[in-house]
Length: 241
Ligand SMILES: O=C(O)CCC(=O)C(=O)O
Ligand SMILES: [Fe+2]
Image 1: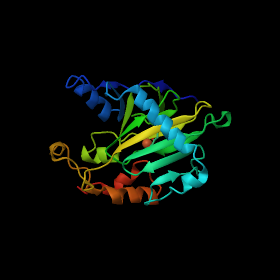
Image 2 (image 1 turned 45 degrees about the vertical axis):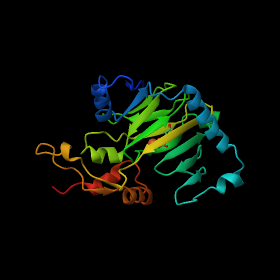
Image 3 (image 1 turned 30 degrees about the vertical axis):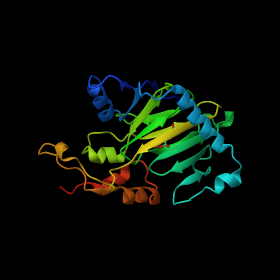
């Protein structure tokens, strides 16, 4: 069944504080939004993706030689779970995703359903589309691409830090056309000391503390080892009160 396609609210970064209400509504509502007027030239965005694509065209021995330079970093080849996706990962910093689509892959899931683990993610996509989010009613909706903008996705740390106010939106990628798709993910991960807890200003009698302090490295390890990348691992950090 085809999913509905929506356009995300676009926040004009050159129009603050006027856009603050719109930003808050998007971050606490769906948990993702676009940003425009970000000051990064379109030519640079296009060039960055061309470079990402050229990495993927390197011979396999070169790519595999850059695997796990430190744990979880570097080249990630296709797996049984992600047969359409190769990525190059600088953990907690950035990731290049290169999707290899053919006619046969149309309709298939190209990136598994997950939340992002950090505070937020800034995603550079393209006109190919296929990014889907779970909306507040639990339904998948496809997000209409808008070249020249960045897509911002709230992650698990964002949810903890905001004491549950910001929504860590679940998302996936589905192949919708037989064309190469390249995306670049910039991660804004966690505070420098790696520990995140609900901000005091967002905790009061009406809004009791929802989470215990969370060590980001420990949290990511747990997400990976238990294959619970859909945000459900946060339950283990729920406050007892
Ligand atoms: O490639 C995309 O559009 C999204 C990728 C993604 O969600 C991720 O790398 O965390
Ligand atoms: Fe993601």
